[in-house]
View 1 (cartoon, rainbow, N blue to C red):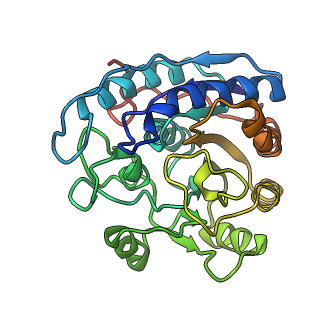
View 2: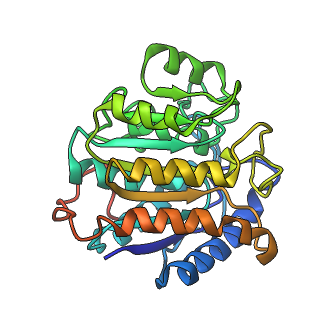
Length: 295
């Protein structure tokens, strides 16, 4: 059965809008619950901050939050839709999915940014810009997955604001990049998904993948993004050819109901994709260091 988890974390983002993430994520999770007919499980998170350690702001708080999140995921009996909070909430669900589905797991990462930094390459020290890279087993030892994603199993779609270290990882072939600077076509995403040869996918949506003219209430808006209809079409097209076994939606920085309403088609598309395979998941694995079990 599909489960909806709210993880109202803000400490992975160190930008002026980050204080809006807790209320924004809770409001979006409540909206998702109403749209999808699900109860919302609110995962506890620490409210404070901690110092920059090892190139990561709020490292101690983020590690504690990972423990709370892992405890909640261990009780899930089916696919989980995680509503963040910042993108840093995605590494733990990815760890669970990787252990559950094995090395062939694919990831479809809709994001205006690459999230491919490490503490050594990040200009900001903000963990939300490192989440995907750590899923490949590269970075801080307390955040990386022991069972990392396989090279080129991840499809990065919509990224248009890349740091030099992130571009280097794309050039290295760590991920398959579907740029949109010169236009966008859903078939490009589908082609990249097929080329990855992954049999199932975890779906990540940072709402900054949308053009600010559609939805600007994110921590780091970037012009030139997708329309809501384009994102919905891509989700449906991929779900038609590959199972979506888990998903996360992040970086919502408003609790205004009128502004959130534009996201309803996305919630419906993600919910439909997850419901389609909610009875086919294998048994949850035993815990490992990739998926911490205590704060």
